[in-house]
Amino acid sequence: MAILVYTENREGKFKKATFELLSYAQEIAQKTNTSVVALSIGNVEDETLKTLGQYGAKKIISVKNAPEFLDNKIYTDIITSVIEKEAANIVIMAHNLSGKALAPRISARLKAGLVSAAVSTPSSYDPFVVKKAVFTGKAFAHIKVNTALKVITLAQNSFGINDPQDQDVSIETFDAGVDTNSKTKLIDTHKITGKLLLTDAEVVVSGGRGMKSADNWHLLEELADVLGAGLACSRPISDEGWRPHDEHVGQTGKIIAPTLYIACGISGAIQHVGGISASKCIVAINKDPDAPIFEVADYGIVGDFQNVLPQLLEAVKNIKNS
Amino acid sequence: MKILVCISDVPDTTTKVKFKDDNTAFETAGVQWVINPWDELSLTRAVEMKEKTPGLIDNITVVTVGPKESEATIRKALAIGADNAIRVDALPKDAFYVASQIAEAVKNENFDIILTGIDSADYNGSAVGGMLAEMLDLTSVSSVSSLNAENSKVTVTREIEGGTETIEAATPFLAIVQKGIAIEPKIPAMRGIMMARTKPLKVVEPADSETLTHIEKFEMPQAKGACKKFDAEGVDELVNLLHNEAKMI
Ligand SMILES: Cc1cc2nc3c(=O)[nH]c(=O)nc-3n(C[C@H](O)[C@H](O)[C@H](O)COP(=O)(O)OP(=O)(O)OC[C@H]3O[C@@H](n4cnc5c(N)ncnc54)[C@H](O)[C@@H]3O)c2cc1C
Image 1 (cartoon, rainbow over the protein chains, first blue to last red):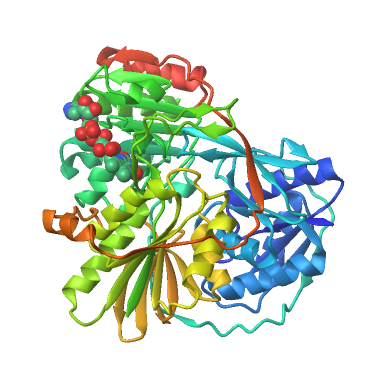
Image 2: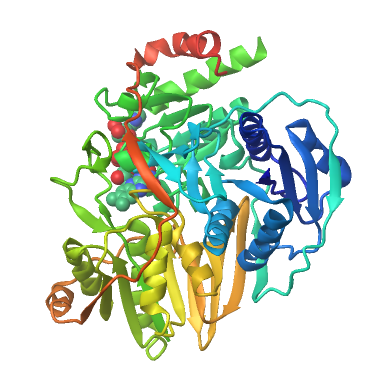
């Protein structure tokens, strides 16, 4: 038995979310007396692979022979062959774009019960029960998995990352022996450069219709700069084209869970809140004292952004410089 | 080309969520049901393609797994522009069960393109599309934000961490769609609503299928503490609190 973690790389590097998955898997491994096996697909240097060991992987399986872009079918072939080879009983992936693409295919192929967007480690192992968010953050459900093999996708930022520890780890290069000719053809790739991705950001600065115009966004950009934050927006802002679609958060955009979320000129519509309610701390700036955003915020400033943002910027700069 | 759009009947996104029977069941009393937002956008895109390029799309079918009550939502989909509908007469039990039912109902229909939403607004499973692709052995692309088709080829844009990719594939093909596929859902016109009443809606019996998971109980999130509010004069104090009390900056 083993816990298999799909450790996805981005351009040969592992991100925080991967270490979160390993820390999560490590706790489950301790509770169930098994060990953690990490699966890496694509080209990653051995030195980089080894870092997975610091977060709990005892063994790393590296499959280098794979399409360079995500092909759902081929990646499913690879992952399922490793599940079988390692006799894994629990498979863990991130609830991100590729986890959402792959976990259901794996689940259907191996008839393995899937819990998507899990928010904590299993509350019981026999029966196997895991808590997940439902109704877009408005509630949780405890899901019982009936099958011997379980697949879990972990909601972002729902588990603390362990301090890295040096431990022995073995790396095995494995050829899954699957046909790697994709039936899909990658025509073009567009990379967002020079900006912190929302899903990587610890702090997020977000603006809504109350910002009045795209021309006022520099106020949020400056604040984000000083805070090392990512930028987000409410849906009307991206619909209007004031900001790119990848910044839209909420029910129909990205679901994020940063440590700090600063919402400026956002009313706090239920569909917006669904995407941010798992944030550890929410600060709202709104000129309407009754705006619903204050019901979910930890801290609030009632005021006009034109007045508040420059002051906030100064105050944050002072703290950062002190 | 024939398109299938999988639609789920979900509580309106503004619903105040409540549970009953000792938190083991969702309280449906007073709930307004709507087409799952992603599915509505998928359908909007399918109808757009059919209208904009005459001869490209011969037929748009919608399918749902749900009880008789979900027919109101199906009629809305027909009013938006689907040509016909299939309802598998069963209560959705889990994603695997739903995908199995759809697979069984459509496996002999030779759809060229199947569209499913990336998430459902109720159980947030993000699973039916991928499972269905696997069951029907179809090429699938997830997080699709644009879709175009010609002859037997589809071109999609999908979101990746930190960018987008444009991908081409041959039909039959399954796209799991997200934001961008269409911006605003199409509002049915009066004519559409009238026509929807007479469009074919086929009800099929559920196939034998297992479930892999079961919802044991629901739980509401803990109530948030009160918001500490300041006026514009209190910005410094707030930043101090964020630094010293919350240790956020
Ligand atoms: C199916 C569905 C899905 C949806 N999905 C999403 C989603 O994913 N994400 C999302 O964000 N929305 C979503 N929405 C839309 C949502 O319902 C709201 O319409 C939207 O979130 C409102 O955006 P807003 O807060 O920016 O604008 P508004 O609601 O217009 O709020 C603007 C706020 O700014 C404040 N304000 C105005 N002037 C100032 C000023 N000078 N200084 C300070 N504050 C000021 C106002 O008091 C107000 O509270 C969805 C809706 C539906 C129906």
